[in-house]
Amino acid sequence: MKIAKDTVVTLQFKVAEPTGKLIEASREPMVYLHGGYNNTLPKIEEALEGRESGDEITLNLQPEDAFGARDPALERTIPKSEFPPGVKVGGQLEGRTDGGEPHVFHVMKIKGDKVLLDGNHPLAGRALRFSLKVTGVREASAEELAHGHVHGEHGHHH
Image 1 (cartoon, rainbow, N blue to C red):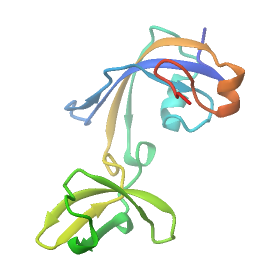
Image 2: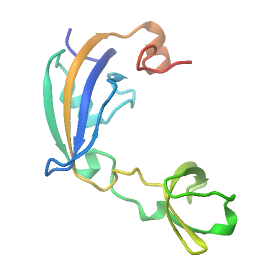
Image 3: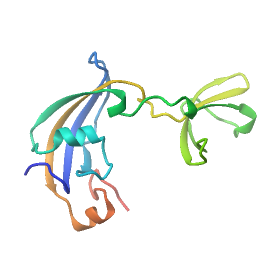
Image 4: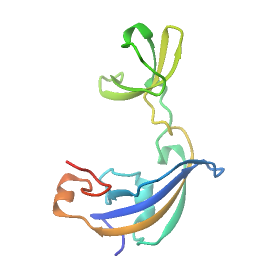
């Protein structure tokens, strides 16, 4: 079966810097609903369209096609006194963007009485190389289509 709109795709992936230095490799297969459901990057969907199980591809994506450019407006410096005790580098918390939207921020650094937060995706602003191997393709169920994501093993569980 070929990858097309409304199919469930299972794949193994690696994300590396353009030089080939590995950033992340999947331990478990990634499973997503193909066809514009925002379950993976649009350029990945585009490259996988028409492929089938066993196919392997490598994509070199610029930041705008991967996780976007870094947005300095998503960086914050907050007094440490505004945080509960035990705030640690690497922690995450929900805050608000300048527009008032809820957004997840990462604790990047604690410097004296200041906490530096970053709401950018950790890979924002970076060109990336994606190595993908399709390990399965199947038709999506009516429930998966209605919900806009995959259910079951390696997918979403309600």
